[in-house]
Amino acid sequence: MKKIMELLQNMKAKNEKKDNKGFSLVELIIVIAIMAILVGIVGTQVIPYIDKSRNAKDIQKLSGLCTDAMTAYSSNAANIDSAKKYTITIGTDVTISAGKGDDKILASFKELNKYEKIADLGLESKEGKKVTSVTIDCQNDQPMITVTTVGGTFDPITSK
Image (cartoon, rainbow, N blue to C red):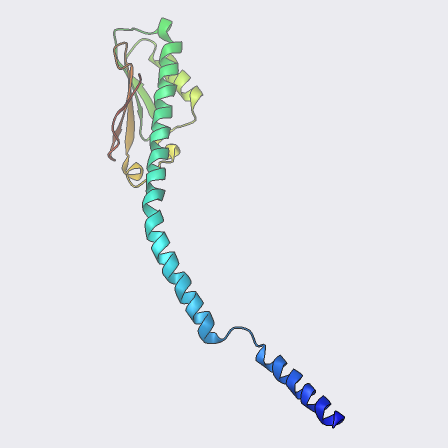
């Protein structure tokens, strides 16, 4: 009788080991399907926020150009004609137009940032990729600095 009991216990132990297989293929497919649905829902909710953050980053870069132009214009105030309007253009290269002192403003502006052409700005948003040039107007009236873009739909950025 004792041998029969041991034999039954051994068979029961073997059966318990066989039942411990892990996940079935159906269970794994269901989990993958649920994850795919969640990724699809979350992905469509996150994409607009990613573009908004890229747009905000582009505006920040354009605002930085406004600050750099203000610094370059102010630091060369003694060497420029305050009655003239100076225009810095970033397109295929960085240029300035006006007259007396414009080379000093341009040199100061280039010293403050390393942008040599529009591609160097690295604008990332959908609207930022449409920008073909940036125009920065410096004058002695209000607003002192105005940054506008050609292409894209960015509002002009002005100094306060």
